[in-house]
Length: 242
Ligand code: BV8
Image (cartoon, rainbow, N blue to C red; front, top):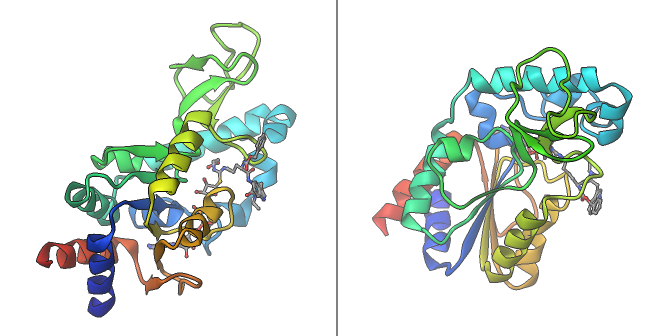
């Protein structure tokens, strides 16, 4: 595998503007369940039953408590070697933005800069009706009323299925993808759009794609099969030899 991590380092070194894209797999070694894996979140729940505005309107308490359960898990865990590997890589390639589908906040927690949390952050909360952000306690069992409009219910600050992504995040991402000549994709099943289409945007402009996944990556210029927590630090090591 050293040959591949060295090849990845060379591609990164030769790149003028690489972008980094992560999914739930980069937090797997922190002990946070992914969505579609063997022990994934969606194994016991259906995304449509929980991660949608309709689900929240139908049963706000169920959805709120599901996010409480996930926040509890995340707050007991910490970033892993993969997150710290990306921070080291970004120190070597400061122009590399980190686009993440994850809502756990672990890239920022590990010290990464220029992080675009395209699906929001599970520890943020805003009002379902007036959309005012709230710093209310997110550990309560009960769904809380908005302190601004007094009528709406507070919801997690994440992007649900069927919801548009934050405008500023999408604007930033399109600027980065236009400049990108390489994309490094780590720990995503590539099932969720628009993130799942980012690699083909870069490739369609003649850019290169590298992917790290425990399952063999396909349709990429360079695929590394293995754990992000092992491979990312190895790529950094190889990069520093160049
Ligand atoms: C939108 C927040 C439009 C909530 C999430 C085409 C174009 C546009 C939209 C669509 C489209 N087709 C369908 C859609 C709709 C939909 C969609 O994509 N549906 C899918 C299911 C087909 N998309 C949307 O609704 C998006 N909105 O496009 O809006 C619009 C415009 C205007 C007006 C209205 C609407 C919004 C999508 C956001 C959904 N929210 N999360 C929450 O977290 O509860 S998505 C959710 O899935 C998470 O954010 C997660 O990050 C994301 C993707 O999953 P992955 O990260 O890939 O995780 P997964 O478990 O699947 O895979 C983990 C991978 O890691 C695996 O491959 C595994 O092998 C690997 N792995 C495991 N361990 C390791 C590892 N790899 C390396 N090392 C390890 N140790």
